[in-house]
Amino acid sequence: MSDDRGGGVLQPLDPTGASLGVPEPVVDLPAAVAARERTDQPRWVWASGAALYPTLLRAGVTVQRCHDVELTEALLLGYAGRWGEPRGLAAAWARLTGAPVPADPPPRAATPPGTGQAALFDAVPGPPGPGLTALTRVYADQLGRVAGTGDPGRFRLLVAAESAGALIAAEMGAAGLPWRADVHDAVLAELLGEPSPVGGPPRRLAELAARIADAFGVRQVHADSPAELLKAFARVGVELPNTRAWVLRGVDHPAVPLILEYKELYRIWTAHGRAWRDAWVRDGRFRPEYVPGGVVSGRWATRGGGALQIPKVIRRAVVADPGWRFVVADAGQLEPRVLAAVSGDARLAAAGATGDLYAALARDAFDGDRGRAKLALLGAMYGQTGGAAVPALAVLRRSYPTAFGYVEAAARTGEVGGLVRSWLGRTCPPGTAGFGVDEAVGTDPEADSDAQSPRARAARARGRFTRNFVIQATAAEWASTLLAVLRGELAGTRAELVFFQHDEVIVHCPVAQAGQVAEAVDRAGRRAAALLFGDTPVRFPLDLSVVECYADAA
Image (cartoon, rainbow, N blue to C red; front, side, top):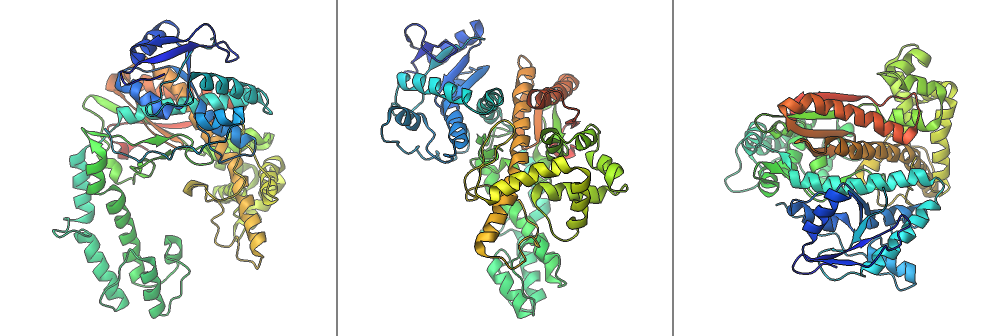
């Protein structure tokens, strides 16, 4: 157990999770962990890597492997159809013993920065938890529940990748993404003009707001207010359902291009302006708090800082240290390739064996029309079934019936309230409430235009969600496995993982190591595909760039 002096207790375990020998109290837990890493390289078992690992990192200690009880409990609860129940160690222990299940503590507020089974320890900062016995018993119980899943081998890989993600997230937060504050300020000045001396929007936004008001023939319009914009359009005879960009682009009015420019600059000012930079960039590094598996598909999120939504123009401030470079890897066409791998459609897999899957589809079934091939495949995965997608989907259904049937089956299951699973076993939540922005699939404006009952529309939306979940969640698993393998490839070098966003990863490394790092990233991508899908013909190519500035990556 942890104490105020940084001590703790180590408990060796056997492969079943049973204790080996007696617990070993240690006065200096980080030093004891470091010593055990040098001699045994164990898999550590702990209640929550997010709570514990940053403390070890601050002491200069890294570990190779872990089993994260909290993350694993969330996966197992979801698999059992109990998605969303408290997942912390205390709740897991209560369920195991039949005691009342306490709620998990709320997430801490985001604060700008600053071969055998081996030892287990419980050293979570804060009030005492259920204790070492609870942690040991819950871990053994989790091993048994994993063994009882439909495909234990796959689920073990999911748990390993999720736990490794917690290590990587903490390490990336500690390393930080190199960030030039002076370049950032220059970009903001170029885009927004001078800050207002009395507060409020900077000069460029104020000018645009005035021009928007003039275009409507009124004295003032708050251009950041959708309600005011809708009223302004209504006054000139234009009735709109909302002020989303795709709706505005269909309107012929002089205010439209000004509003679109205002919206883009306003997002930059509020999300990545000077106040953001003052809060989140310290000592030349941007250090967000990553949340692995933060959305229901398994994709990562962040707790503050907006790291996963850095606009391309702001990426000009992401500049490597002198003598260093970024190796940027982007997995193109990831989700279509995942569908080719998991569906067992031999014809689609043959297309996925090429460098450009859409072009291969076009040659095979769409008379060379790459655009139609892409529209059909994305429509099948995202449930976009209206308009121009209809004839393209008919070709896809006829030419690739196994792949089409795979996502259709997931959609039908979702429509009747059933649960679907990713390739490794992550399970969708029982309802559509709570999935993140990136899960908002089925955005086709025509999809729900027909007259349907609210229940039918809800079922259809649920089907679009589950249709994409089986693909997007598996893509997230591939990406997490890539990260875990790459972390091992980079161990012992000066290179460091500094950024990850869905299907893109950045490694910061000395110039002399850039070529070797690029090769390591490529190997990691191929290894991730083999671990998930075995001997598949589908390729998962990575677009690699070696750049000094993130904005210059292809």
